[in-house]
Image 1 (cartoon, one colour):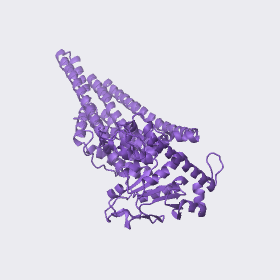
Image 2 (cartoon, one colour; image 1 turned 180 degrees about the vertical axis):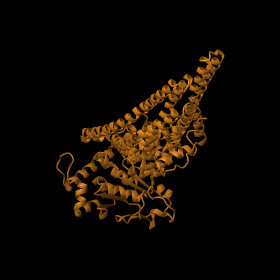
Image 3 (cartoon, rainbow, N blue to C red; image 1 turned 120 degrees about the vertical axis):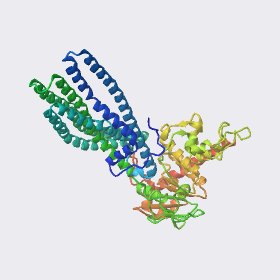
Length: 633
């Protein structure tokens, strides 16, 4: 019977090695594999029945002139043909079920492993490697299970044919017994070479897939900075290198394919030649000569299956090794036993590694010389890695992880946006489904907290969504969509611009209303006017709650209660944005971009930059006044 997919429980895979993993896939469906081995063996052995029947028809019917015996043997040959056809169908059907079950089981354990690893995955494995493992490698690994059916049958059929040939002529049987292992030995070095070439090719293929994914994801940004052609040339160069590696794999594979077809043919010719010499000497009958030819022709099938199985085993072993490598990934030691109680009220966050102290209810900006240090700090404060961070004086690592996730939120500027309507993306699918439609008694034409008019067909529970959109300066994103918040958006929101996606991510984080919100460079893809509005509205939206902004934008840092300068892994200065500009040259150089420019324009001084910031804020205030006037009308 076909497998039930998906499995209620895929099981615990054996990750001690690629072959052990393949053996685990076999052990997960023992009866189906046993049935496949049975059908494969009977079908493969049954192929040798027809040469025997043909030999009997010749010796008992044609040579003796016994028409009745000839008809009986012909009928037996026809019946054997129908039986072999049925066995072949059942063999193929069962092996297909085995491969599909193995593929589905591998996909399920991989999905569980990826979800368990979580935020660690992008730091451990490239996206291209995950894509190729989840597609190509799963299929190649499941194909190895073909050896459990026709592979087992090929070995048994080889022994049966050798016994039948021994009954005809021992020297022929000796040739068969020695010839098949010789063929396998001749192909062995090529199989080992194929394994090395296939491993290198699969590694480069994953890297190239990752590069292609990065280029597609950042195509608009690349076009904006004039880097599209540069990245295209680099991708073409890597693609040519991969093509060269593919030629290496193809060269070895072509030799294996050639030997797989040629060696059995030469082997068949040698056995038939020896049998003909024996028949010419009168040692065997004509019928036995035909039987020997039939046995040897049948022997080509199991020999081909064994050689093809070796080829599949090499490819499957390489693929299974990559699957096992992914399954062995473990999340950082962010979880663990609960040894401390979380503070009941908003409390101070302290990172001993950098010396950062975040008072409760304050908006704290962190300007890092190295963006990687900012990301590492966010991971520690959000407990995505093991650290000595304390929360209200207790170790953050000892607090229940579910409570940490509920109260502390780290929002990356490039966080994943799942497919769904805009409302579902912002709220989450389950929460979005709970919103009730507006009724006649509801204020269908009321105004949101920002003074924006809401349509009568929107849900009554969208006031907080509108507030979050307003704070993230993303109201125009919803207004520009055909169906507003109900507009379907694909995965990663590729139909939106980079700045729009970033503002939607910020609105999603604000809508969650965590006790502690950690924003990583939340305005890197927006213009100065929008950034000024976001900076002011963010402070208002998060008033009284702890907010940490990791950025080097003077517009954002200028609205922070306190700014910390992170350099060489330590906090070297703290204070208001204006104070740090005056007394910290490193900070001034960092936020003012005096160390260089990207478009050939001269760098601006701190005074010029802050003047621009004030002008942008004045324009933002003017824009808000216009919006308030419209709302008042």
